[in-house]
Image 1: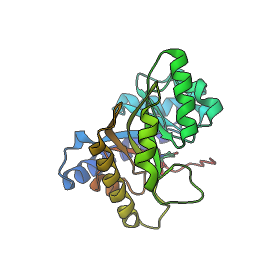
Image 2: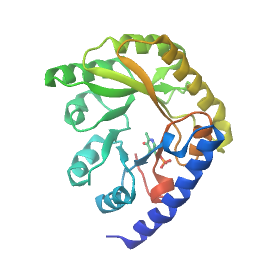
Image 3: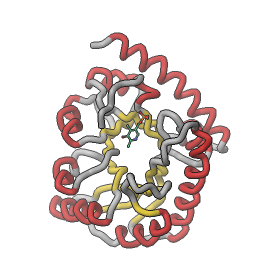
Length: 236
Ligand SMILES: *Cc1c(COP(=O)(O)O)cnc(C)c1O
């Protein structure tokens, strides 16, 4: 076990917990209203298990292959999938994760539905919104999000639990504030539609560089990799 990774995590975790509490209070909420999900790509199982035993109760992987090679060795934890998911890989993870954050197309939602019905299960999903309207990113367009949610909510075997977004990469976190605010507005608008078979429980946004701003603007789940585990070569 790498001692250094462990102590890096311990130090970061303490700081992040304090930052989350402060941001939650700024937005009129309690620290426990915010869920911290550890983004564990490229992180060794030993370090992940140390994180779980230290109090992390949600982890997110973003590559199917890597997830499958690691998940059986995890201490008990809620396992989420957060990365781009190819339709032909849905069947590999569908019964092994409790939430898929990254449902970014109707086609993917339909495949999840098909595989879920086959297994007689219901799969919780978030709709990924391309909030910056970026060519390079997948996700539902902001303007069509309500119509997309209405369509997907009709599919058997999937339950919409909220929204996820990755705003454009900015030089400083303040530049993302308007995108986070826009997402919160959409979250409320969709909630107000009271669409059958869906609920706006989770607003998953905010990563290492901007999680405090995301929480201030209404995120209730943040996905942190670098801030928790230190910098590493992602190559993804
Ligand atoms: C890697 C990853 C994160 C965490 O990114 P950091 O900047 O390292 O905190 C969050 N969400 C997704 C979808 C990711 O792939």
